[in-house]
Image (tube, rainbow, N blue to C red; front, side):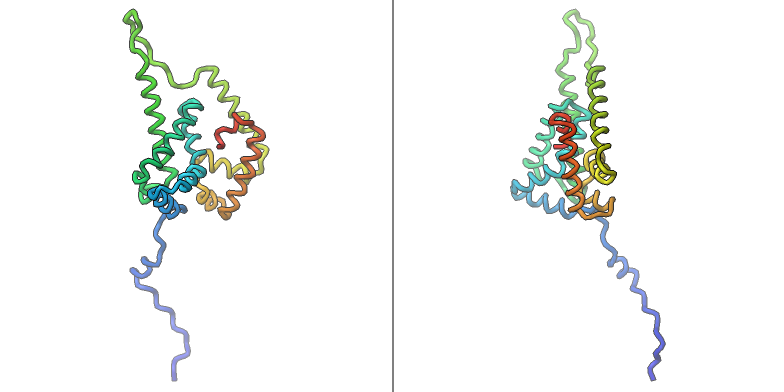
Length: 214
């Protein structure tokens, strides 16, 4: 007669358990790889998609280093370089946003160095001329403070979830997938929240004040 007592299930061999575990990867690593492949095939919609996802974060970083006009110009340069040399992006090494932000910082520093290099080191009398400080002066700092206060006031009009979504996307440079994972909601919900929040903020900040949200 067969023994009807239940026997404990045998555990899988260590190697089998290791094989069953998912390989570590970022939430949008596969999406970045597909986007890179489309860029390599000269798919213009892939470039538009990359711009829609990451231009705001790139411009946000550049605006901290450069004036607004130059920051917008360098943002265009960054995505033009992505289009011209898609093979330079390796999704196995970094996410697309991280790659673009590193490129943006590098381009910004190049601009700052070039601007300083064009300033004569000596006056006509042979005296040493101090290098210009690239940081904003008192008026510029005052304008920046006023803009920050305006942004804070506009953000305070959003719900907690909408405000957190905007801060993650534009201040922390997180992707839509990363936000969804952190907040425990579907990606579609993140996109809907951003769409609503951006429309609201642009009405509050106006065209110039809301330029960093484009």
